[in-house]
Length: 108
Image 1: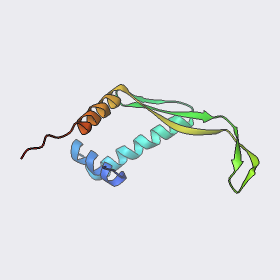
Image 2: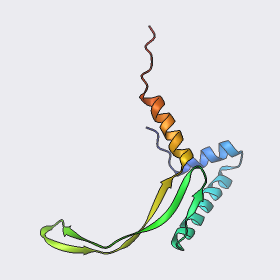
Image 3: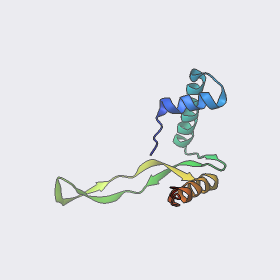
Image 4: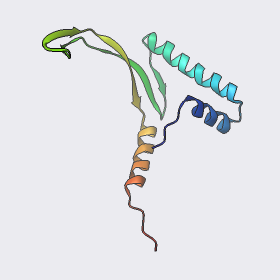
């Protein structure tokens, strides 16, 4: 399993686009800022073939106090970020999953 952190993502953006690491970091931070501003304003960010970032409101509900299981507590409504994968991303993951699930032939 491969996990990419922010610094590694910046390095890959810089390498693949031919810009400096500082410029790649500025691009990434600008993207994050635009997505955050748009979601905060109630909007949605859609990237065709990749997916959509949106904000959803989770309804208030009753819960149980973990320290006192007999006690019911009211959990308030909260707005949470959500990502819905697009067709291109889903198809890419299906192909990589199919390739990973195929047994590799044994060559002696």
